[in-house]
Image 1 (tube, rainbow, N blue to C red):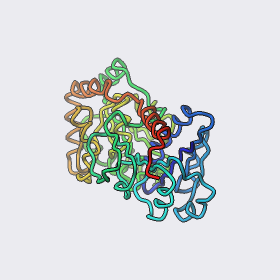
Image 2 (image 1 turned 90 degrees about the vertical axis):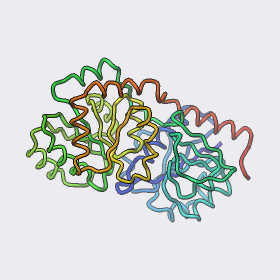
Image 3 (image 1 turned 135 degrees about the vertical axis):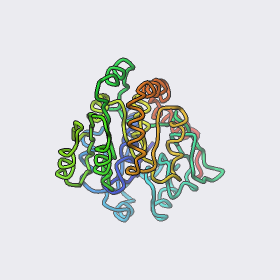
Image 4 (image 1 turned 60 degrees about the vertical axis):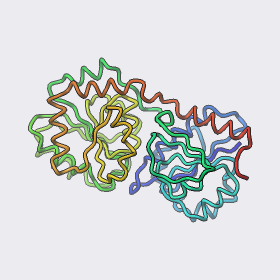
Length: 340
């Protein structure tokens, strides 16, 4: 059996699709039989090689959809193909769909109405699918990367009780809009002193000098950290994490770290709505209108609420989504239960 991944990742669109699909591919490679093969095809640029080094599966990086279409006869785009991307051309989708049971693990996908199955990390969604599409949704299908580790209550409480509360900021691997700098400028308006960990991803392309200059103006202790696999070792030292929403929000819920998510596109609020309802996350709709500063000052004065959010994460996400997805895939393969 061939289980193939097709995904996109770049500085502009972010690395979330790669992180999520890589987590699933890693698990499947460890679970599958010797005769089963995992194939991993990335549409992006060669810098992504740094994020895939030492992967247990073979991978290929293509600079464009046209390049992968030209190579289609040499690729394993049959049996089962898992898409993790926002958009794909009709041509590439049709090439795959003629030969494979097609799965999407992205919450947003241009061909969602045509896929055979969807694995979605929350009960809430905003996609249309056909009657033939099988939908597996909920926190049981939240994929968590291997490096994300749980924070025990005693450790979290110890850091929470420090005089200066520690806040982490992570705007994604690319941070195309340079929200990191905007947030640092906004947090400089906070009255009390904080320790601020600014996580800069692999694809951060803006000037570090601007961040350093803004840090020099600050009364906070600001630590710039460029991380990859060690990200959750650093985040485990924090009491609150500021995010743009996305897969790291769910990883934080798994790890036990409360989050404030910047949801500028309110139409996509459903992507984190369940975590807000479960009492583990919060949200703001703008960086620089005072709402973010107000939320942080509130939680600094009411730290017991952050501890409650931490406790609410316990048992919420079990980290076994990859096993569930693989079991469903194997069942489908045995049934030979797809459209062609």
